[in-house]
Image 1 (cartoon, rainbow, N blue to C red):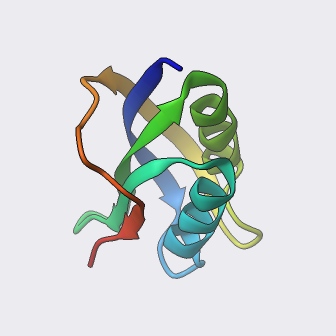
Image 2 (image 1 turned 135 degrees about the vertical axis):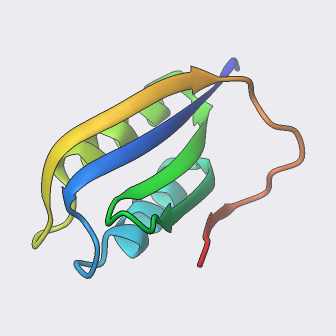
Length: 92
């Protein structure tokens, strides 16, 4: 199983709409590790790691966002995988 790791930044109405919880729930569902957090400039950012097909499914979900979100742009970049990550966390 080849692992993929992506960092992402989500633009739009993405804070105050349950975005981080939505992302954590989906990541856990897909067996993906990593983290997500709000940024000071009103965006959401994070890193996701898992099987490529599962990572792509999660990124598609993130691009849609939860019900009250309005995603205008999803930036994503492949990065080096991380060792020893056990779950998906919400960073404050």
